Every structure is written in structure tokens, then in C-alpha cells.
Length: 158
Image (cartoon, rainbow, N blue to C red; front, side, top):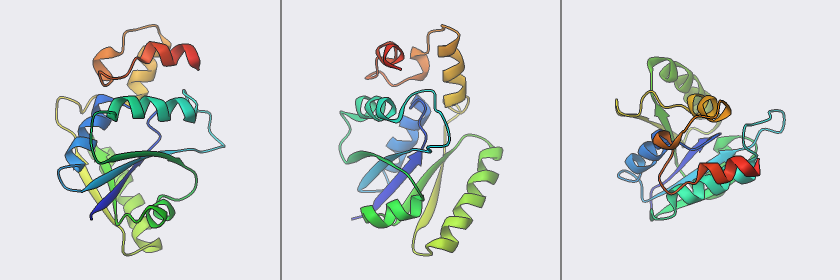
């Protein structure tokens, strides 16, 4: 069974993330959406809410697991039996950063392979940063968020 970890802060999970996940499921038997928690950073949404947003977004998609984690992604891969890390890329700037991270991961755990999946033009402009900016300023972010997610409900909970 080919298992991949799709790590990120997912603050919040967007249609761009969903597109990358669906593409990954064409390659892998199971994809684990792993929401990283960094205690030194304050996210827009608390980790528990980010996890519920992702669960809402993927609830009708088979072969997806959702978890939260702290520490290194390669350690999570070992724990979950995953041999692949999926990373989405929107721009060439994303590629340079992701390449450096992939090389570090490869040095730490040579058996884990990073797989880059480019976003389509339709979603390349959507980032969590853009969505947060829309939300903070009272805009309607529904066009950027998966349909199963009631983002207004989660805004009230934060």
C-alpha cells in the first residue's frame, strides 16, 4: 500500500489544498492530511478548529486520514508507515522552498520521497494567506473554501 503524508499548516484548508489532495489520491492508496502544530506560532485558527475544517472538507473522500502533529514530518511518516511526502506548489518561489525542505528530509530519512504536485491555474492564486486576509476584513471567502466547510461557523469559534 502506497501511503503519503500531505503536511501543512492548513490555516485554513482551501480549494487549492483540496485539489492537491485529490491529485495525490490518483497516485497513492492513502493520503494522510497532517496538520502541523508549532507551539511558538499563533495561527489564525487553533489547531483543533483547523482539524475540524479539514475533516469537513474531506468527509466524503475515501482513503484520507486527518491528523495533527508536532515535530518533523519525516518522523510522522515513520510513525504512519508512509514512504512519501506530498507537497503542493503554486509558484516557482514555492518550488525553491519546497526543494530545500525535500533535500533536508531526504538527508534525514533517505527512504522517504517527496512528491511535488503543481496546482492548476484555476487555484494557483489561492493561498491560506489570501483567504485569511479576506476573512479578517469581513469578506466572503466561500469561493476559496471547500463546499463542505461552513467557514462562518469556525470564525465564530476562534
